Image (cartoon, rainbow, N blue to C red; front, side, top):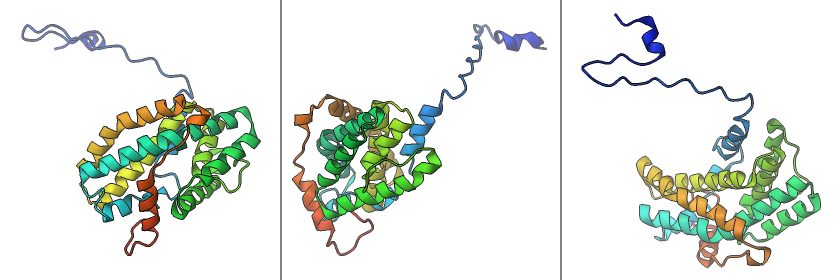
Length: 250
């Protein structure tokens, strides 16, 4: 019979095998140590009631017109959107919005919010930014955050404001923002192409590096370097406005 104290140290050797040490339990984390991580997971969750699931940001039109009609093409479309648009405009503005919110510079925050809205290429993309931003503003009291001093509020600005008010670091907050966008795009592709669930997981894994690179690009760009010329995205978004059959609002 195994002595009672054997389980507290090492497992008894059997059949000549070397004993396997049972490591000590890790020290408990300090109370509240996981709250920043949990806050980021909360903000990036599809359960956040902002209605992002209703938008594809022109992906639906790209599928309809054969541009993103299978898994490799959809992955390429999402990766290009992330690399050429979000990383070079939306993400750098997110970092500046976060910095303004942390500094308490509400005038600069309002200016950046207005700039982001003005940079939306089409009516659908602008409506998406404002609807999801208004929905986030209504949800903020439940998160213990006061709404930002900007009206109308873009979702990008609202997310940055929330991260700043919760004391979440800029790079991690931006990564959560971009991941939520990426996940929403892949979910839309799974529905639209259509693709299987495993295809969606393959796409998400492939996009990990793109999200990380987008954060690095955004952090490196100066004020005079912000900008993109994603004409294909703007054209497909405009075409979506009159598309005959649609699942998504953008």
